[in-house]
Image (tube, rainbow, N blue to C red; front, side, top):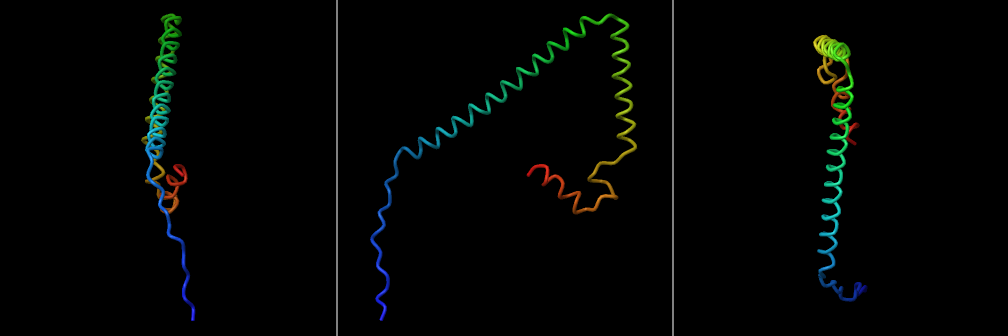
Length: 108
């Protein structure tokens, strides 16, 4: 006859404020990190825009007209390409499984 196993009574640890403090600390670090990323992004964008505006001010009128012409040509090329080509999702040449799996691979 096997009397069965006997274990000592499990003593549950008391909940301490340390676990809540740790959770709050993690949330604070995540929030500070997110704010820092946003501040860096906005600062970089402002610096870039300011440099671009300074550069444009150095151009004379014919250079500005040439730049505008180049930008318009680029927009026209993009419109032409967009009208002649279909996206990967709508493409019939790419198998459905691959079309659906690529975003998962990119995100993963």
